Amino acid sequence: MAKIFVTRQIPTQGIDLLKNAGHEVVVSSKDGVLTREELLAQVKGVDAILPLLTDKMDSEVMDLAGKQLKVIANYAVGYDNIDVKSATERNIIVTNTPNVLTESVAEHAIGLILSLAHRIVEADQFMRDGKYVGWEPMLFLGNDLVGKTLGLVGFGRIGAEVAKRLYDGFNMKIVYYDTRRNEDLEKQFNMQFMELNDLLKTADFVSVHVPLLPTTKHLLGAEQFKLMKKTAYLINTSRGPVIDETALVEALKNKTIRGVGLDVYEAEPKMAEGLAELPNTVLTPHTASATEETRGAMSELAAKNIIAVLGGQPAITQVVLKYLINP
Ligand code: GLV
Ligand code: GLV
Image (tube, rainbow, N blue to C red; front, top):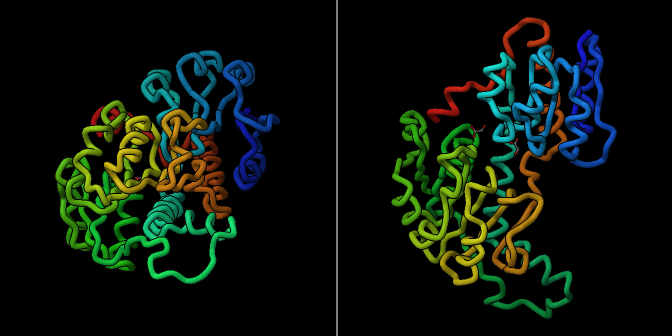
């Protein structure tokens, strides 16, 4: 019987799978993110860890856990919280939860786009404040999506699902930037590949779908915002540090760009000073994958990865090191 440490209560599907496979499962009883000390105190002697994206998994954690540690199954598709190189050196398999959350995150990104374009959050607040005194021709004028250009920065699974929905369903033009081209989907979505600067000059909506890597940290900052149209909206459902958030607040204040929809922040759970006071922002608390269906599926996939590895089988969705070095 192997011992598995789950760093936070997650939907029970995965926990049940692990228990039914005969493993001893310890779920952190704390209602909150474990402090570093609490985390270190509980990993000793475990065969598997199921951490959240807020738990830093570095060589110290791995060495403290001990040589029997075989798998770290992240409860997230992003794995910038895990030192994959140190894990690989110690023969520890790292897994993530791709695919199961792709559509949910794509829907959320589109939700942010629609909220901004149709000014839904501002208008909702206006109603609640009792300010609606009668129909007005010029009240809360926003923008249509139809005919506008969507610029996707990063074209992996999630970017592709956003493209599909906004091309097929909303008649948007799609341009994209990535380190790799996808010529099949270029044809399918009548989509144009562009270098980042050209995309920023062209797009009416810029939606970010890259992993956080040394090469994507502050990919978008003051210089890039200046290239964007003054009427453009920026949406980020990937990782906060991809955007220089302090520069973003300045760009919004100076009307360099029109608005922003964020699900992720540079120093979560904090926000850059001034961000929350700006009207042209829609802000959600890193909940793009937070649907009952998706969080349940993530729980199952993380558990299945652990069960596979502990059973001597290949992981279902292993994080591969080469992707980190040469994305
Ligand atoms: C959420 O941010 C994830 O990476 O799954
Ligand atoms: C995430 O899984 C992506 O590839 O976009």
